[in-house]
Image (cartoon, rainbow, N blue to C red):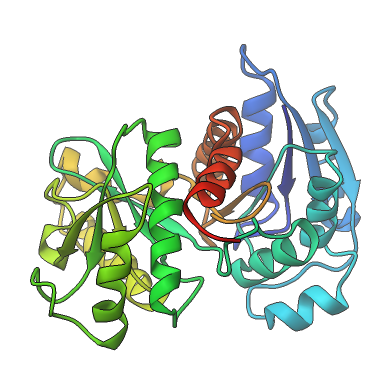
Length: 315
């Protein structure tokens, strides 16, 4: 498998990315080739580490920083590590592309260069939902789309369902709509309109509304919401987790809220595998991003989403 990595993405770039790559290519079972995209000056100090038969360094231009406007940056910095990596992905030179940099830029570049799956108007990001039983659920969307139409939430349900099946092995994922009450009539204008659409949506196992307190209690396997709500949920869990760690609280269930254990999330709805990681990703996070990228490709998640969308929606 050919895996592309944006070495310039993240607060600790390229050091932590390179550290993960060195560990990966020197492992006994390494069967992948890595294409490392980055600025020559930044990568030069790691030349000896990157001098490996399983690594190809691709020199790029000025990188896109975390604070830049995604659309402007992608359109003006055409030779950035993100754009060049996406070009390689679109042309089939790599099977998947990983980055921990500007999430918006990764999304825009993926849409512009790789293109979205027909029938998906808004690609989404997801997050792991640890469950009391020990399995992992999926939360979609967690930040890509702050405002959505009711119909878009039904597409998120399909994306999350296929992700839960392919990556987490859940045969018939239960889908819930994140809301302020379990009753059908509860919610805002969007969720009220989305409920009957989800109820009638083919190809998903919709079980109704789910409240925030039940997201981790095995009531649903896929929780659907707009990106604003999803991002607040994820960041609240993240802050709560780190505050408990500072207080010396350790627990197996709580450890599942550590994003480093999962690496990142695929951009669901893109025609190829693109994995986006946290901006403060360390080498462990990059290692887990690589594992996730391999899983997404090997499980044929993208083709399964394409089939499901074509069978359940009118394109």
